[in-house]
Image 1: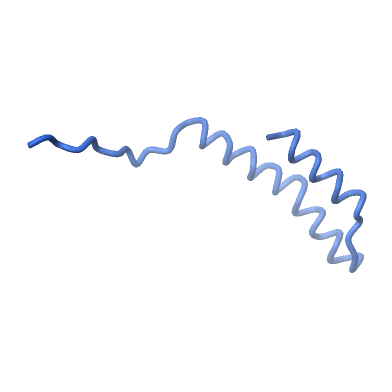
Image 2 (image 1 turned 180 degrees about the vertical axis):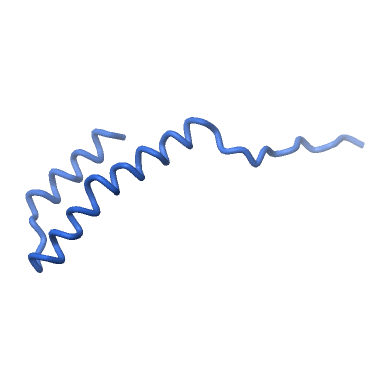
Length: 59
């Protein structure tokens, strides 16, 4: 009987790096924007568009 290949529970380095980049973007860009929205009571559409573009450029 042939054994099925075992899966590794280890997260690949490229996934770890992506997770770190996402966490940094959320911390540095989105959390301050969220606070600004809460303070102003409205969304700055131009800034939202700029953040979307920045996220796309970052991959």
